[in-house]
Length: 140
Image 1 (cartoon, helix red, strand yellow):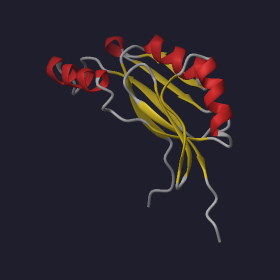
Image 2 (cartoon, helix red, strand yellow; image 1 turned 60 degrees about the vertical axis):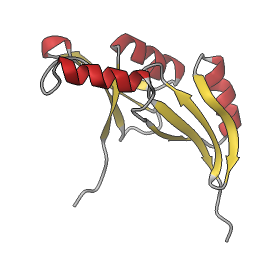
Image 3 (tube, helix red, strand yellow; image 1 turned 135 degrees about the vertical axis):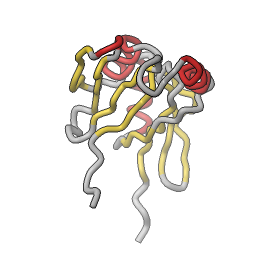
Image 4 (cartoon, helix red, strand yellow; image 1 turned 90 degrees about the vertical axis):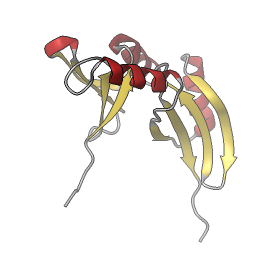
């Protein structure tokens, strides 16, 4: 039985660019960063208040199962913003939007009212998009 998700992978084009975004702009902490074979790094980050979840920043590069053709396709999808990302929850979408925007985070959609709450969409510079969501409490 699966009981917990501990890691999720985010494809990136450059490790240092990804660190600038996730650590410096979003304020995530670096959980692991060490070199591996072939120029690969085991690089994980996560929200400071969620120590049980790590995002693996996985560079789109040739190694293992990824040959030149596969990496080319992956980079093309990243360039088009088609890889997806995830949903980050916040208690105050508008305030978090303003804070992240002041740090240089690029939003593709400002805070917008939706049936499930207030949501803003941003991208990480590598083509991954994320929803920043303040969930509405369901009426009882």
